[in-house]
Image (cartoon, rainbow, N blue to C red; front, side, top):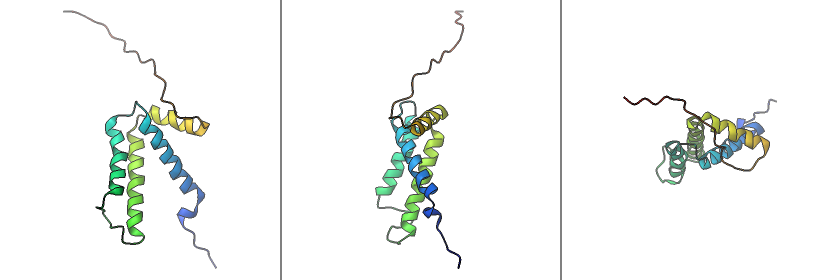
Length: 117
């Protein structure tokens, strides 16, 4: 007899979700991430605790899946809105097991000429 398995039973799905949440927490603390992008996870948290839901939580499974889907979507959009250099830096830090620290300042130089007319 064939055994039916859920995609949530796969260890990769849950660990990927936890890794994504850890990355999002680090990016929330990063000074180079714009405040507008940081508002997205905050709004997702407000949605979770608010009594208004798209699908009410009293419906046993669908109510919780609705909330989980919204949070996963908000985290994904937040990471996509963050600067790619910050995302790469913090992903590498997580893989290396380093503690949180903001990105080092890049020596960004704007080369221009000043003319007075």
